[in-house]
Amino acid sequence: MFAQLAQKITLSGKWPHRFLSLLAGLLLTLALPPYDFLPVGFIALPILVWLLDRPLPQAGKGWLHRHLSAFATGWWFGFGYFVGGLWWIGAALLVDAEQFAWALPLAVLGLPAFLALFYGCATALAKLCWSPGLGRILALSLAFGLVEYIRSFILTGFPWNAVGYTAMPTPLLMQSAKLIGLSGMNVLAVMVFAMPALLAAKRHRLSGMAVWGALVACHLSYGAWQLQQPVEVAANNPHIRIVQPSIAQDLKWDNAERRNIFERHLSLTAQAPQNGAPRPDIIIWPETSVPYILSQTPDALARIAEVLQDGQLLMVGAVREEETPQGLNYYNSITVINDQGFIVSSFDKVHLVPFGEYLPLEGVLRALGLQEVVEMPGGFKAGKSRHSLKIGEHLAILPLICYEAIFANELGYEGERASAIVNVTNDAWYGNTPGPYQHFRQAQLRAVEQKMPLLRAANNGISAVTDSYGRIIASLNLNEVGVVDAVLPQMRNSSGGNE
Image 1 (cartoon, rainbow, N blue to C red):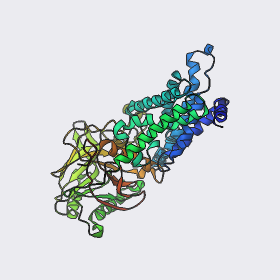
Image 2: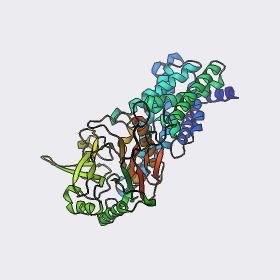
Image 3: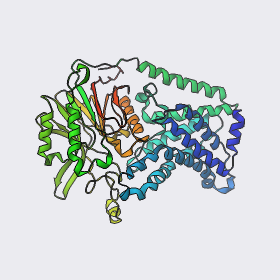
Image 4: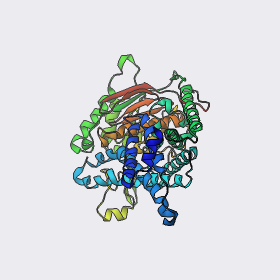
């Protein structure tokens, strides 16, 4: 049965071949959040292998022409995968449709068409090393691992929905990332998903299935062993409150709504803990939650001081203003405020969103009448370096603002050793789409990789506290208004236990 199916796919005509590539890529997106239907990987990747089994055109056509068909197979696969996985980006452009709706095709189709080039390169590269049996599975896996690594940094990088995420829907299946990182998981995911393609051939069938079984068994066993560790907290660990106000994006910068937005955050901050729990020591508001420039609005700081109790600290996502000889610079920041209403420290976002928070080739594009999506004169400036942020006397955190949480390879930092990741974000841009769920999953994996608990505050999205194994301790779902109260879990030590 498998041999006949593989032969039909391999020998399909030009356009059926492309359609099957597109369909396989679309199918694989069902393994991403919020669907998390992992079994589709065992269908999509074998189809890709069988499509690539198609013989190359005659040698007289020239080397480039001969390998163009392998590139096209990967491109169509990638186009299906990125359209199916990223269509929701268009929702951000409809927040101010009058200004940005013209760019909708570029976001929904243009970006996937560009990202598909990476997968085209992966299949073309794999085809150079193609051989019957297990060798082609290994070649495809390594090629995908390489191009996903390149995708993480080229043109500032955009590793969203790297193929490895399709194999990590639960904490059980995330733990191997602590050992091999996202790059290793990209290789592992393609290898494990593609291995059933060997069922269609006599050669390497048994050895391939043995390798497949060993990989799956090791992956699951390691995950299960890691998750035997209990969720632990020390007696003196701080109590955390995360505020999720769920402000609609079209109201966020409405001057008439600023006071109401600010007061909603304060009201949730002052809310009494449930079930007799202790009051929070640290309160976290989401990205750009304060609708004022705090350094220019002493009344807002005074109002915060009225609400905070003795010893409490507030971490807020806010726009920070800096005056320079060239004019005013604006930063997307996390600011720490004490119970007296004083700003005690801050962190500026280092990795900005191109076209969202700043314009690449600014002089050229502004001359053409383009502007960034964020409503900030001149866009944001990037922070100078990533550093830990001191919270009180005994805690330092690794701050990640929104988009920064997707970059697994950019989390080196200066300063005191961090004990937790704080990720503030605003996924209200994307409405009720897969985007907020995908964003949370990537932040969740950073906790596993960094061996630190995650404190995530979303204006709207998924706000949560996870332990260092990615297990959710407490959370609020998309569109909920409320608070998450929890005790900060322990981080892991180098041996894998809690400390």
